[in-house]
Length: 285
Image 1 (cartoon, rainbow, N blue to C red):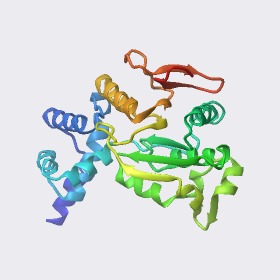
Image 2: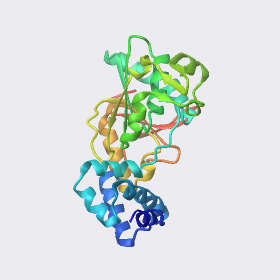
Image 3: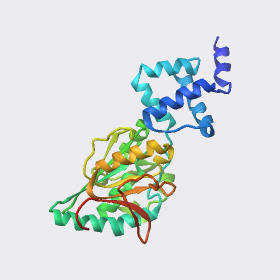
Image 4: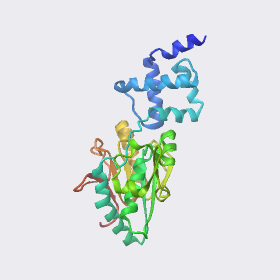
């Protein structure tokens, strides 16, 4: 019996067209992530592994299982997300954030008599992006301005790593040396980010398919996330980001992503360092 089960597990797994349509539709409805025939093999390999873990014989059984179990649904969505990230990814964005966005936000906050800046890192994976943002803000903001960074993701596994703030040596190679020396403690098997940065960042599970509950975000980083959505899901997600942002705020998306053709109210902004988008519903700059 054990030998037979082992053989079944080792066989290459293929979804029938019907099964593929069921799962791709379910994943799209639940997350906005679009699977096409081009990336069908990715879905098949992820499902094969999960079938082994939950000890189910076929995709049809698993499909009916997740319909009845929301925790397993979250596990499935975790499996199909791509959690590639690194510290200070796309340095041009961080230079624009540091040299343009922060200055503009400080000017606006000063006029409003507000001493707090809030940033949302949507799709933060294992936390490198929100921690990078927090370090820059710690360095560049006046001490009287409070900083709060929210990192959110669809992957509970990634969020657990993010919350620890611990990264192996090969994951910190893109951190500028003065940041690494100032904000990390060297440990035997890697680096632990210091509490003064961890205290600026909070992590939460969030599915961009739905409203986040966040309001008045001054800056939103949502990079290399909507690239996995189709046009309609992209438009809906961007609309929810708009609602979460303050009346004067900035949006960073990935280099391969664009709001062109979405008919949004975001203003395209080209800086010396990078391009981004601005929300400005105030009367003047």
